Image 1 (cartoon, helix red, strand yellow):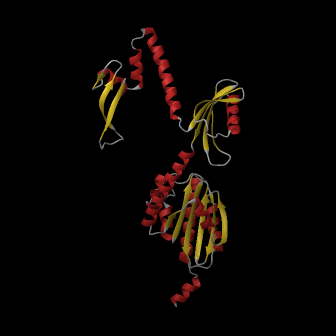
Image 2 (cartoon, rainbow, N blue to C red):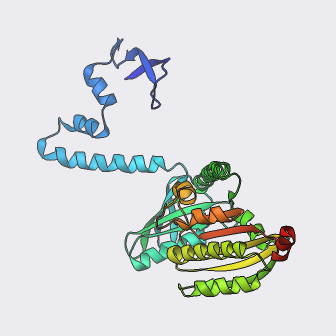
Image 3 (cartoon, one colour):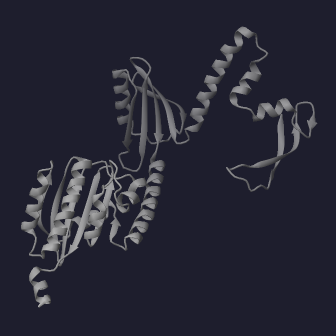
Length: 340
C-alpha cells in the first residue's frame, strides 16, 4: 500500500505538520481514505505494530517472537540514529565495520588501545579523545564480549561541543551586558583570554597564598606593608575587600592565592582559586543579590566588595575563579595638601 498526500497550511505549535490524504493505493483497489485498521497501524507505536502482526501466530510463539522483534527494532533505531557515529566489532586484533559513518576519521591506534583495555579488564570503557590534528573530538565506548572480542561505539561530538561553546558564549555575553548595565559598568565578566591580560598588568607589590583561616591576617599585613602610603579609609577598604575575597576562596575552594599590583594610580587586588566556580545560572544572583550565598557562589561579602572597589573583573568556570578588584588611589600627603 502507498498513500498520496498533500500538505495543509497550518500555523501550529510543537513542529506539527498536517497532511490531507488524496488517494490510498492498495494491491487490488484504490480508495480515498485509510481504513481504521490501516490508520491504527500507521499511527500506532512500534509495540502496537508488532503486536498486530503477531496476533495470528500460535499463542505459545507470540511472546517469543514479539520479544525478538522488539529487540531487533530497538537495535535498528539505535544504529540509524548514529548519523555521526560508527559501530564496529573488534576481534583477534582487527576492527570490522558494522554500521554508521565509515569515513569518521578515528585515530585507530588510540581506539584499539582503549578496546584492548576494556577486553583485558572485562568491563566497559569510555573515553573522549582528540584527533592528532586537534580538529575532531570523539566519544568512544568499548564493550567487551569475551576474552578476545568486543564492540565499539564511536561518536564524532565535534559539532556538539562547538555548538555548546557557541551557546555558552552567547549566554555569557547576555550576562556580561546585563551585569555591566546594572552595576553601572563597574563589574565585568571576562573570558579566560581577557583575564590573563588583566592579571599581568602593572607592577607586582606583594603576593601570597591562603590555605587556612589564620593565613588571612598575614595576607592583610603583607598587603598593607606593600601598598603606597594611603589615607586610612582607603587602606581599610582594600584590606576589607581582600579579607572577603580570601574568605570566599577558603570557604568554596579550600584556599587560593593572591597578589597586589599597581598600575599608575590604581591598586589591583587579584584572588585566584581552583574551586568548582559559579554556575552560569547563579551568576546574576551570586554577584548582585545582597546576602545571596550558595556553595558555589561568592557569598554575602561580594556586595561589600562591589560597594568599596571602583571596578571588578570576574572569570569563573569549572577550573576555578579569578576575582580582580581595582581601587583608585591618592597618596595620603596629596589629600593633606588638598585639605589645606
